Structures are given as C-alpha cells and as structure tokens.
Length: 219
Image (cartoon, rainbow, N blue to C red; front, side, top):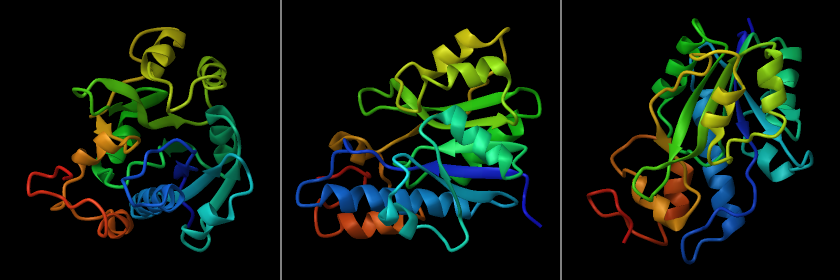
C-alpha cells in the first residue's frame, strides 16, 4: 500500500562548487543520487523527485524505478503535486545533503503532529550560521499563508525559516528540527565524515580527488 507520507528530493541546480579535478555535473548528480537514497530508505515513506527545469533525464536516471516524478518550479507547487498523488504529509529535501540522517527527516514528520510545517535549517561552513533549509515538511494541503510564502521562498533562501515564521498567523506554526549541512561550496566538504555510513556515490566521486583526514576534513 502506498504511504501517505512522501519525501521528495529537489533537482540540483548549477552553482554547487565541485572539488578540484571533479566534474561539476557529475558531482551534483552524485549528491542527488545519495540524497535520493536517503529518501528511498525512509520507512513508510514514498520517495519522489521534483524537477525544475522539468526535463532532466540524468537526474531521473539516478532514482529507483517507480519513483514518483514531479515537475514544478516552486515549493508550493511541489507540495500541491505531491498532495495530488495522495500525500497527506510531505518533506522536501535539498539535493546536496548526501549524508542526511534519516532520523532528522523522521523528526520533521513527527513535528507535524502539532504544527502544519517543520523545518531543518542548513548550517554553513562559516561558523555554523543558518543558511537556508536542508528540509521542509508540511501537512497537506498547505494552509493558505504557507502556500503563499512558498511561492517566493526556496530552500536556498538564506532566511527561509524566519520568513516562513513571519508569514504564519501565530507562533509555533513552523518548529525547527536539528540542523544539518549541505554541500554547496568546497568548504562544506569538511562536514563529511568518512566513518558515517551512506553517501556512497559521493564518496566514490571524491575518491580520486581530495582525501579525507581522520577528522573528517578534506585535505
């Protein structure tokens, strides 16, 4: 039976900095593939991929057969499309979080028991300062205030959480889960922990390039 919970990974966008000697397009697809593996591995959750622009055969190729494909340019549109597929709750995941712990996504879903939405902030390499979102979960259909806000807010909007909370009719409508990192710059690679399971495709792409020190930094 299809789950009424969906976890949808957004398609990668140009701009992610690849390590020296690594093809940027290959690197973005590796991050996407590993993030899709995170979504596919969630229990009682249906994985999906959100494409913008809509025609990205390389991105579709890294998903598991049967993965739902949504073609929408905004987060509000993506949530609406997932609701049309039968989702009662959905989480949208950034495409550059290959080592995202499934537990964090699970906490966002649990938070929906008391709020219409929940977010996981992205921590930048610059001192852990929040910089956009790693994931955003919501009950569906979206309330009007959230749908309107998500027409202009993306996971890359630096103050996304603050803007969503400002749009809410009262406090507590968008609780915050534990933060995590995204890999958007070369400096972000220091977040990767070689001892952490998962992110196998990203690990393979990085193997001929920068080497990880035991501390998890990239030399």
